[in-house]
Amino acid sequence: MPQLGRDGDDLGANDELIAFKDEGEQEEKPNVSSERDLDDVKSSLVNESETTNSSDSEADRRPKPHPDVESRARHGQLFQEGPRKQHDTGLFQPSPYVGYPFFMISDLGNLCSPYLTNGALAPTGRTYLPFQWPLLDIPGRAAIRDSAAPTHLSNSVPVVQHPHMTHLRPLLSYSPEAFSPQRASPGFSPEPGKQLLPTSAPGMSRSPHTACYPMSPGGMTPIPHPLGWLLVSSGFSPRLVPPPQTSVPHPAIVPASVKQEPGPPSTSEHDQEEERKPHIKKPLNAFMLYMREERPKVVAQCKVKESATINQILGQRWHSLSKEEQAKYYDLARKERLLHSKLYPNWSARDNYVSRLTAEHTPSLLNTQHHILTWLMSASPASSLDSPATPTTALASPAGPAQLQPLSLTTKPPRITHSVGRNAVTPGPPTPSSTDTPTSSPHTASSRSSPQPLSHPFFHPPPTSSHR
DNA sequence: GGCCCTTTGAAGAAC
DNA sequence: GTTCTTCAAAGGGCC
Image 1 (tube, rainbow, N blue to C red):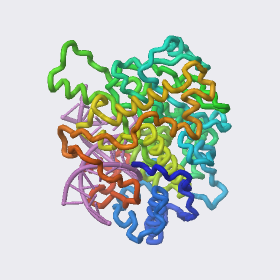
Image 2: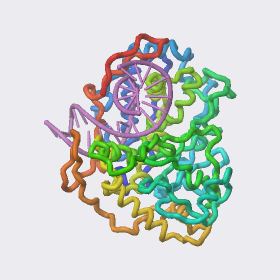
Image 3: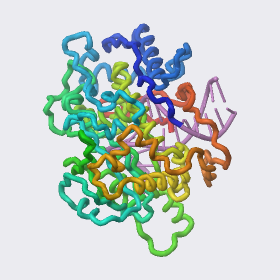
Image 4: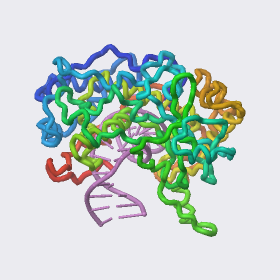
């Protein structure tokens, strides 16, 4: 389980700094040490409780980026990037994440504050909260749903259209704007001083990322966002805002077609049906959060659309980030895990393993449904969502998450055996969570294949190997 | 249509 | 305690 019960810990507040050097120095030995230090720092960021740094750092085990890749990347064969980090020059640009809501929160115990903070969020720093109200069919939903640009959430509560209702997505959304505005200026480049594109470059619209913990695509009928986007602004006033204009329907919101086959499905069809059913996805890790934000920039800058290539670029840029920059993502990821664990206290990552359980059979999801439903019903149904007594604001209150315990769910229900798969689980008491205690990095030279040369045509022929 | 690719990190299983 | 595997996002490529 994520590091619950560790409220108040410093979020990666580490005074250790990493000195980044110009690209040309990266192949020198001192920089190897720096890279190792970075890995150590990253480990410490992930696990603040790790007070004693082991010399056997993750960097000792993690394979170094393929020199060919780095070399080519350094020489800018793809991005035509100029000199990298120039923090010691006047060209250094402030971090684009200065205004990230998380870092305006002093009370880290308020796990939901990042998403529902009533702090003075600038209009560009809004937090969108896609919230899927479960199992409630309350008049007025259609009016809200159909509203072209609803601006105020009335006393109406929408209903999930999916008959199973299993989809609960009251989850945080790292709105592009939440990451951005002043922070992530359109022309932001991980390589300060080398503006690859004009700051007003078109095509750099923010990614229309919507839900953060969407159920897997395909398990739902298209759901026009029931509540639209809950814009959390100041004064505990959740507002409905329309999705981003450039938004492409999120696959989780508008999933793949769900074939409504008449009659009872056969066994195989039943399996397929179950495969399509929604599940709670893993919270995004730091790198995933970074990728989600930076991907549009890379696409715009490099004119590359292949995700494999983009991810390679992002991986390199990730390593080139300063400790402070990475810390923000580690911090964000940790909060996301915390919130995820709050929302889905009984969820386990193994639920999503191949042959994952369906929503109907997943105790965690069942509990979550009941959990949130009970919470919703316990909230003041007659009050406006503008009222602090509403679920949304209750969630926003420091005590909100704790109040989400109407059920006795202090212990995990017995796991249901996975029917198939190499990771089949047998019923029994759950093993102690490894996340409660510091863990070493799972990445090893054998588990993580060395980065292959970029497959982009600008590079060499694509690799043929894969770690999968 | 669905899997592959490609990245890092987290979590859990396996040893 | 260590190692290994899976999954999370993304979308073009490929079969």
